[in-house]
Amino acid sequence: MGMLVPTALAARLLSLFQQQLGSLWSGLAILFCWLRIALGWLDPGKRQPQVQVEPEETQETQEDGNSTQSTIPVSVNYHFTRQCNYKCGFCFHTAKTSFVLPLEEAKRGLLLLKQAGMEKINFSGGEPFLQDRGEYLGKLVRFCKEELALPSVSIVSNGSLIRERWFKDYGDYLDILAISCDSFDEQVNVLIGRGQGKKNHVENLQKLRRWCRDYKVAFKINSVINRFNVDEDMNEHIKALSPVRWKVFQCLLIEGENSGEDALREAERFLISNEEFEAFLERHKEVSCLVPESNQKMKDSYLILDEYMRFLNCTGGRKDPSRSILDVGVEEAIKFSGFDEKMFLKRGGKYVWSKADLKLDW
Image 1 (cartoon, helix red, strand yellow):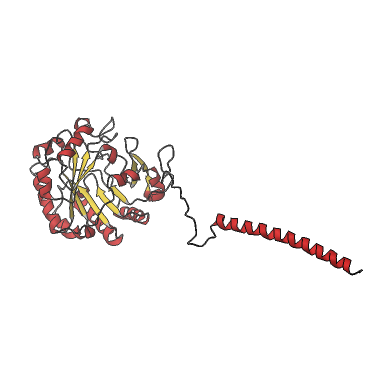
Image 2: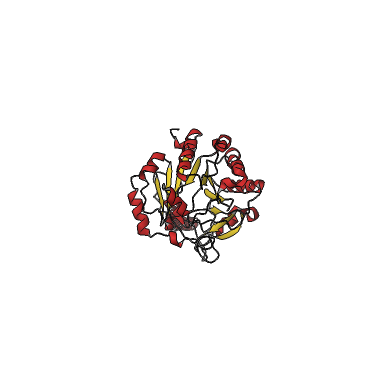
């Protein structure tokens, strides 16, 4: 009888312990289930879809308009010279200096751009064929295609100084040649400032078209629509030349270049209204290769490098330079470019730009 009391007490204590232990396990089980749900520890087939909140903007900007995130320079326009043999009245990149980088320094800058993500380089001016009779340009074109292996290398030129010999030497390395032609009336070209003296700008354009076909270079035409050509009908001429792209710009004012006290041009007399520009586009809507660019589309949607390899910021209506990429690198300099990537894509800045992919009938 004396042994039964401790045994009964022990059984009672064991029962109470089991009850407490059961409660503890129940609590742990609930906690474990909660953790599985919260942390996604479910079978892949039973996992609940997660709602992702997209950021409102992909690129932050500071109050001064400069980017706080790195921009990839996919397509760059390098104006390595400001010198030109024409005097176009609306020119927005005028001969304010005669500086041209030494060839090896220019190559070093192009390599930096390639390492930063550049896929397309466009050489412009001024007139790019003016430097060393096109040899400086030819060597840069070959370097970009042969050594940097860029998908696209292009040139914008007035065409007056190009010789067939250049195509023989460097045509294999060039994807696109864009020739500036604002009118198919030679008298209008003279009024604008594209007169070649005894040469005919339109006849020269047709010769360059043949050379591009012969040497397998994609042919493009750039036209600036202004007061002197806004009423012209260019449909038949453009269709006959059959360029891969016909870029049509609205005449644009840039303070310090073609407007203002320190400008070398006075372009106000060339300006047209938005309605007049739209009327020109409507008249040429059947031209399939037409790519229109109004002032709004054009102003901040280009990455422009000047002769010192400085990005030019046009957001304030003038060209404010960054520091040179040769001094501070691409990532630092491009923060001050004012580049509008959304507008670049909206205006069709990214397109099939390698002649290997264009599949042209040469």
